[in-house]
Length: 66
Image 1 (cartoon, helix red, strand yellow):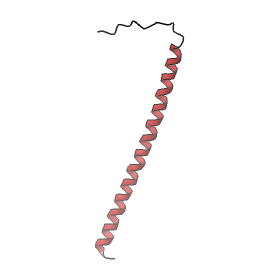
Image 2: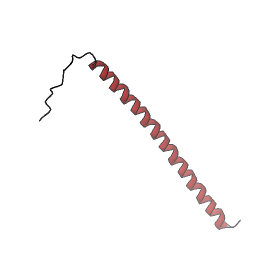
Image 3: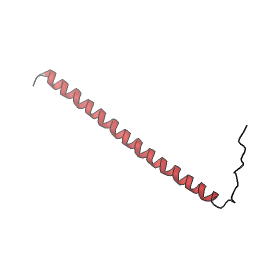
Image 4: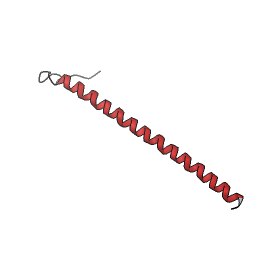
């Protein structure tokens, strides 16, 4: 094996390590985003549960003009 082949293999190996690191980071970010979505849905469900006992028609004529 000549020097150029060894250097090319080394560069390719480093590029592969970088790609693996980026993929792992993206997977962690995706998992965190999923966890945050679950928290948001749980909070929305709790808020909806509080509003379930409100009398009918409350907020139907809400004026939101500034």
